[in-house]
Length: 597
Image (spheres, rainbow, N blue to C red):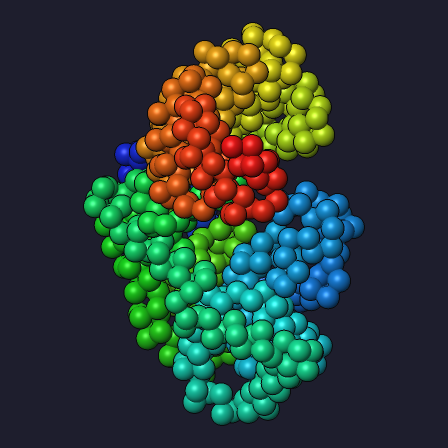
């Protein structure tokens, strides 16, 4: 019932979303809209059904041991050398892994492309491996494999420096020990071996010189500074969003589009900065995007699984399958715990839903019951199977198209970076043709068309780019990135000999500022556009707005010096130039301009 309610609320929230297309398909790069939620539910139902066959659970556990050992080995090698997976496979990675550990030398990413996602995965599997190591391991081979996997997983989890995952894994293991304390006495040999493995892992990290970094990282959990402070600021600033759409929220995966105007005071954001698109608390994220109804279902599901699940797990204490129940319950608890400081992601969430399907089958479903009764007779089964097979083929074909579009899009970005605009435009056009529902494709195409028009002095190309920008805004009128990109492109067109685009640039940038009022670069560009239009007073106002957000921006002071000089206000101009030079001694042109006055 809570799962049905969970899916039903997600459907309703998507239908009344501020942007239904995003809520159904998911935000680009995050992909946790209704379509993905539906896939999670399918994984849950499949795992729930397969859990009837206990022998499959042993196979699943063996695959988890092997995969965790493999991924952890990659993470450890990466930390001390480089990522062998990315090095030899030459796989595209969003962190641009062109050099060994170019992204972050202190945190491993393994095959996940992100240290936080790797940490979340390790936090999920560690309680399961821990439970097996404690209560099973009947054969020597499996016991050795389990101990090795536990040791490597623990080491790699520490190397991720993922504090939320540390808390989650700790919570999951504590839950397992609490459930099994009386049983653990009978497995004191296994418990001793596990304790030695934990001690050895921490000892090796200490001898390798990581004791202080790990200690400082753990201590930072309790200090209101750095990313901890950032999370607290996000949580505090997100609270007003609940009252905007209290019942069903803004829609799945739309946090990015409603948070911009509530950014904490004093936060500075430039066009190159990453946008905050998650609340970094799953409860808060659910409440904002799926409303109070979503929150109630979330709490209902969580309480049912853990509070009632713990009660139902106790009778399993004397069963040989206790390690499965305890391990997977601990795994689910670890994942939910770390979610309260991070966010769900499709690289790790599927494993959680599979585990959830298994643990609910074992704890809440009798051996003979079925979660879904189809009512299909034996005569009807061949036709039903044929229909389902056709549907699978159609869905599989349809699902490949966005991937194909993304390949063309990434090719376009690579070609554009090399200065091959014509070829990039071809690739961007193919991407938008294959998948016409993704605004980011159209934004890149529009920017490339305008840039090409500027380069070749072709007004038609610029106008075509303008039309594509309009299409992108129609697809998603709530994405600030579209308006800021459009304003920046129009400003470049105006500077290159088409002054009519200055007004369009100002209009687009102000529309973006309605969604995100702390975008400093937008105020700077607005001031530049007004300066080209010789509306110096409005330019000064725009740059003062930028300084109100970022008081020590040297570029703004240099621009103010120039505009004051144009107005004949020499003293103010000299003062602004000197301020720019003091803020940035490498800005020689500011010193030269000041000396000239």
